[in-house]
Image 1 (spheres, one colour):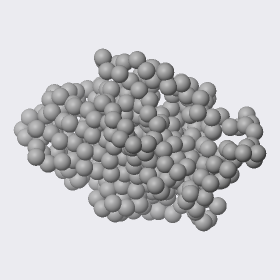
Image 2 (spheres, rainbow, N blue to C red):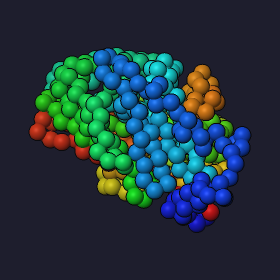
Image 3 (tube, rainbow, N blue to C red):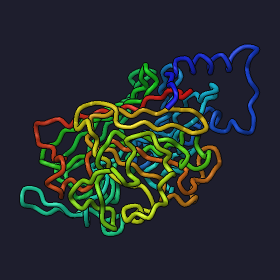
Image 4 (cartoon, rainbow, N blue to C red):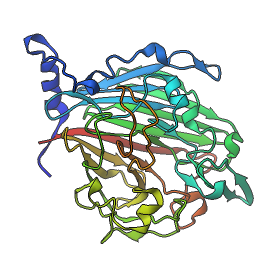
Length: 385
């Protein structure tokens, strides 16, 4: 990997290019630079379920993020590329209605109560069996029929760089036990990152596994396949799955497999290899067991092969779900007018392991009354030169 410079320098270049006589003219290639600037905030007005929907902006240094309280979604995220051009690296839509009607319901969303899959939508807790709506074949995915991506969160913008969203999930919502109070704080950090701080409290034992489901293209939204992106994941093991993408119950070494990203590797270099695990999801959609465990640290680094934008992911979660856009079908129109075609985005979700509520060998996701669920993840952007 070439030397990486943090975006402070890139931000200076960006600001210089947008002021004074050196302002550069927009070209047809600048759609990702202008998508957020031209976004009509009125299209994020109105209400769903009787609650007002709004669009918020947070920023710090060279990073600007747009967030809607409908689903706690990251709508866009602009950072400079290696030439100083502002680039929107998150896929999203131009209105709240666009998210509501999308055939891919999780773009940019806060996911809960339980991120990832629950086998056959069932789990037993304290001797009682619970059944969650099966919305992913025979399994429940990302909280069931109406997960946190479909609710309107209460919002408070505490500063130019911070937004706090809260949601009360009542006992029995989507058949999960307990009243769950959730808080997510989005922060544009001083080191050109966006941080997600999650908190939750319950009055009954309940499973909780929160994450954000941003879809990234580090070359810019709609700028082609992500198979040319470079990726490194700090994991010696991944979690094999069955044909429905439910873990088999044990972890496997990445050595000698297409899942070995211990060194920086082009995403698409082995995605078409004859490998049983890859055929199940048509590519990557797997949990990686982070070497750092539950300690806060670097989990992964991705690099846009054209833009030079580097995204370094830090988290205290034990797992990282790497999804390579295998189910994208070009059915939705993104902010810049381009379709969400096959493998034009990746998701790198910091979380606990899939189906952990049914897998006693995995780290537990059960939250007890009197305890506080608390976890943090940060996506830091820099330049590869």
